[in-house]
Amino acid sequence: MLIQTQFSIFLINKPGVLAQTLNALAENKINIIAMTMMDSVEHGVLRLVTAQTTQTRDVFKKLGVPVNETEVLCVNISNQAGAFADVAGRLAAAHVNINYAYCTAGARGGRTTGVLKVADLKKALKVLKNAGPMLSKKAKTTKTVRRNRGKKS
Image (cartoon, rainbow, N blue to C red; front, side, top):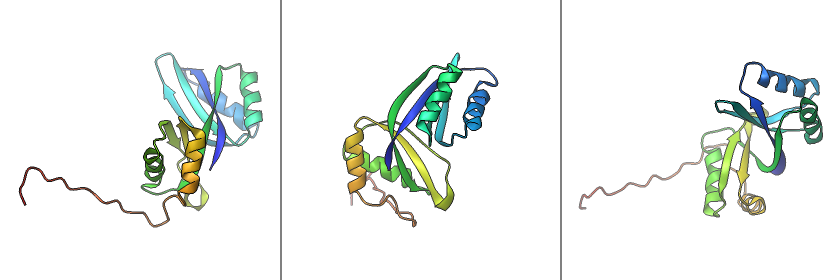
């Protein structure tokens, strides 16, 4: 688990613009750790975390695209049902707000990277470090609460 720089790039919403941006990163041998793309009528917002922050910044300067940088929390978790829910639940219990989140589809070793933009990075780090391992290889089960729907016992 570590704090990484996330780049938010504003791209014109037309064919080839995303490909051009990703090709520029590939040509500079920049590895993408995680990314997400959102769109609107006029532009798209590409959010990504890379393994080479300085080189990524240089590529975007050369491309002349509008870009914002922010710190995000990257959490290495099991690639299984409930793993990201476990992280979100731990942060919720500590009253740490998650502004947005996304994750990779999975990596070698059955792991994935969850990217979280949280309101309090230091508190989130402390909560997750002190909580122990994130969801073991065997999926944890959660108890469901049954509600009494007006029936008397």
